[in-house]
Image 1 (cartoon, rainbow, N blue to C red):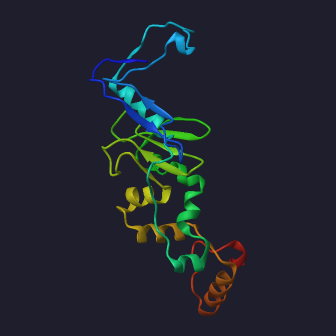
Image 2 (cartoon, rainbow, N blue to C red):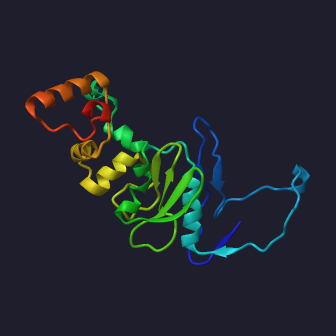
Length: 217
């Protein structure tokens, strides 16, 4: 329980659902809502501390952290083509999404790290000094955006490659693809690599940046 110092309280909100569940796993009771905790139902008071008063910014950070656990959030992905599936064991977008670099997409573009746990990293948007504006789910490899003051749509999930395409290339996925290949992302099928290496050797061509060491040798 808390009171808000500098803003009108919202009504009830459902913040997070487990995948496939009908009822919310995390929800609030706000203006017009109520909580039933009668002793007749088995509840008892363990601590009777004063209800704290927090700022609206602090409240939004709490809500954002809770929303980061929502498994129903829609995730924006980059669609892959049949040609990519035939060429790659793991295409450049998927390879990047699973990489260590995927976790620093926001901080590489002006966002600030404001906290982390085993499963989550939290960020503050540019031009703001505190508060949670986005999170990264390490297990699902997804950024969740809570703020409406950036290039991203709020209350939505973004795979790292999608987030990078928006921040670095204005949403140009072809430019992102070239960038990822040049920087070594994408695991090419062994038979394809062999043909590329043989052709490059015959014609004196430069090998793509994501060719494996085995094929390069």
